[in-house]
Image (tube, rainbow, N blue to C red; front, side, top):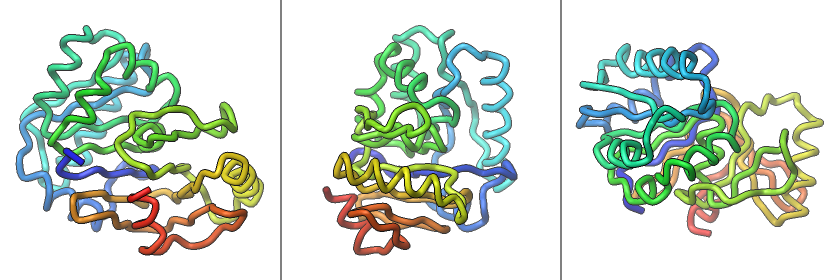
Length: 225
């Protein structure tokens, strides 16, 4: 991998990083010049600007302010988008609509820059989904699609403990496509670095028709697949 750190997040309903996640980010984000967000609502410009400011504040409150931050959406020219990714110390793939975000990534031709980045690459909800080689948005289709390819780990975000119907759907999709799925509760994270993969929070693995708590052995195997 080229990135200094890859982080996959489910969601932050309080719009704050949990302290342990913030601590991990602060350890890695030693350079904080340029923060670039990639929208998952490409045409909703006011929403994108407001969300980007709010998400940057999540860093600010833990003493991780960036010199500048910007958002890539449909306003951004492809050449400018590629340059923004190249210059970014941190790229954050935002939450929203997964397939619209992938369309934007391909429209702006930034897949190559994302995969080549040596910065910190983060994704939340839709953004974390799209980081995978085999991405999955079960609300739109039970068939996996080609994601950015930053990781072999496929996730489903916002999975609450009591959502048995959703877990059964994930079991069916996993079995049909031989695809292990990490079902992440909010305020959880998976981190990938050159030293391997680890996680924080509550995550279960859906594989071989079973739903089990994620273990380090399983996560290491998925990361190496």
